[in-house]
Image: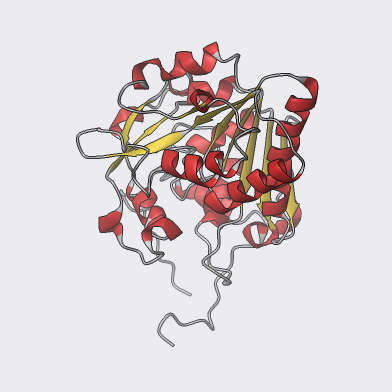
Length: 313
């Protein structure tokens, strides 16, 4: 069989072909192996991961209420899961007075103007309408304890997080580009090859990677139709410094296209978990621990060609 060699596209955020080939070959039985004991990897049944995340968030909020201890979280925005957390809070009459939430990111326009929380596809809109306002008024925290980056606070956002007492858990997932939050590799705003410099970077407006635009065009908020014209060109995000300052990082990864086994996350999670710790794969910071990486069986499944499948059948 003849060999055909090529370099990854210049659009690719990480282009070391040998490493890509190695992590592509990580098999299911080896997926949870990692030399850092503070980086815990667990594979869950496909129908269990969302439940585990909902329970993790609810139990932390309940424990903070029972112990009367502040709980500071950095959170992304999966709307349906937050609705369920709010239901549990109401059902069990859990006070959220000690809860502090900082959104990890938000959308921005071409000039860097950050989307207002009244925009229906905005991430703060989601946090308020699918979590905060779903909690019974007598159980809610003060509204000023639910914060996200905006045009008025971006310069002080890192200090706001510090002043709240530091973050107990930074929650999230891994993007197609290998991003955490909107920390996108290859963007001008995070452009460095120096890992120590990268680790010290804080919140900023960022130009989104083409892979992030493609990923977002498959989201429910944007019609699940691949409409890249609907996606804002920039975002605003916390930086690596805020992620690493958290006492724990939880990463939940289960993205497939509907009921299929098609997933962009199967490779990007492998690269983040089993490739080098690098600014070119921001989610690789999870390897530094303490971190929990949760993936479904579908994501941990071996990567192999399916010769019998035709896109045009």
